[in-house]
Amino acid sequence: MKKLIVGNLKMNLLSPEERERYLSWLKKELAGRKDKHSEIVLCPPFVHLEAFKKWNNRKVRLGAQDMFPESKGSYTGEISPVMLKNLSCEYVIIGHSERRRYFGESNGAINLKIASALKNGLKPILCVGETREEKESEQTLSVISNQVKEALLGVSRAKAEQIVVAYEPVWAIGGDKVPTANEIMEAKLLIRKILVDLFGKKYAESTPILYGGSVNTKTVGGVCIDSGMDGVLIGRESLQPHELVKISGIINDSCVLK
Ligand code: 13P
Image (cartoon, rainbow, N blue to C red; front, side, top):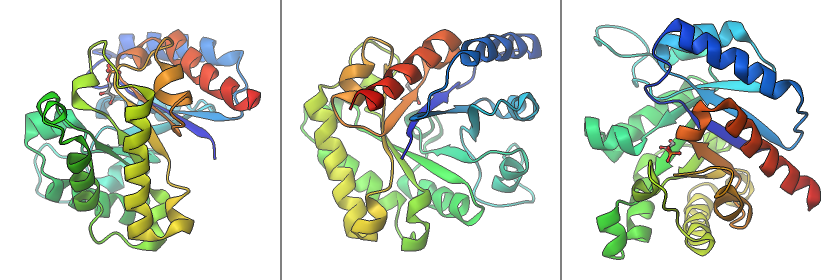
């Protein structure tokens, strides 16, 4: 299984010019690399998906940052999974903590989105993770457990292979603090156990479990390689093509050395 390096570009790249600068810089950075063990997935804002599709770089897969669970109709302001599919998206981030926090997304709403993404042939990247308060009151594992179980309620075994889970502690996003490799491993083991309980060993073992939150070239060794994660979900550093490609290279090279 290739390691996944997912760039969540969030609400950035404010103009077509800025997007074009980003894409041509990224193309240059990617030109010299042949990473066989890692794969970059970029999730730009919806308005840029078409341009990313046209850019059509074979070294980058495409994803979206969210979606609505219905396919079509009177849902002002929303984006359908069918639209994403038609713009060549393979992945869609679901349940990011910023959506839980600013848009009140519940585990129930996230569950509907996961089911719809899978039904429409998209691979959902389910984000889970505890807040600072939850960590301080030692609720980390119970929060992760509830989030994973409720988000995946009713998902069939046959679809399990399409799911990606990202452990993103809310307190580690956008700052400079990251969990220890042991804390991340503990979260990963718990998530893997829940997946095994839900889908059986055969399917659950192939589900990629990523880490997200302040990933950069300095932290990636501890948060991904040492903790045995299947990849990373990157915010800020994905806006810097050279850093994104460097992180992908570090993870790729760690697989070669093994
Ligand atoms: P940062 O990498 O900026 O901490 O953001 C992480 C994140 O939220 C990715 O989804």
